[in-house]
Length: 381
Image (spheres, one colour):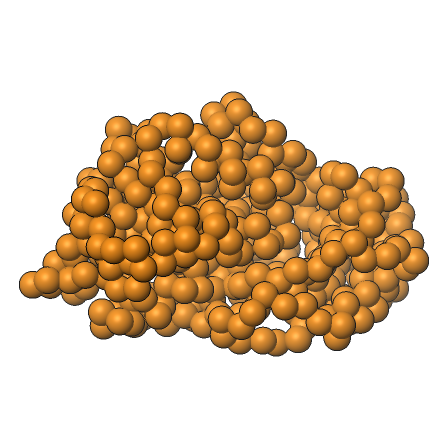
């Protein structure tokens, strides 16, 4: 087989890039996935999105991604169950309150996504089910919300396939073929696919493949556990994050209470397992935040990967020192799904025209050797 562009990875980033390529008129594209479409973390996440980040670069990028998420139904015609219930950070220290006030004033208001610092009394009035013991304030971001990641993944998949993209599931890329410092295609478990360009968007599996041709990205994979309870009447409006324990609690449209906590710490491409230790830790801390969920039973648990860079921000594009026509889109550090609608758009233009969008420039892989890291520490979970 010979095609113009090979995309390695059938997750949300590969899908949005493929969709945007065909929108721009390029349908000689094949997406390769080692298992089934969206096998990785694209359907193993919390299904939420936000625009509030400490780094202005990530805030700007997230704002553009949010616009495309809100436009998803009109473009793709799948119901993504998007709900703008907001994010609520519970703050227990004065230094945290000052940090949110400063970012709200100096970053978020500048980009027209300012939120509100709430007193405990205001939190109690708006969200009376939250335990406010020790809480001195809260930050509420009304622009943030939840979505159905499965609908978004398969909406992009169906639309891209309908427009001419070829999908080859259960096709594992074993090697990127490079000749005379130029990409010529990929070797898969089903044979060679020749191509002019290759995009590696394989999440946690990207680094091993890239290392095989001498490209070493500073990425670490972390497994995160998550779960939902049985459904009950919908009452938890915002996505709640406690800065005391790091626990987060939300409620899906169907009524399941969802959440996670960064425990236990498991690094590497380990199996997608879950543990009783995590269930105990999350339950204990979630009930402290929302006591009314105390007697709920778990419906299911699962795990996925955070693909983490040193500055907790994604890597897009290419380094001129790499083999010609090799591109990457990975390292989203837990923000991949919410960033993907815009990441796929800028990557499609980068692949077709070598265009580097102004908002894409901070995420080039060259930033690590140039010491131009993005200062992002607002990572949830």
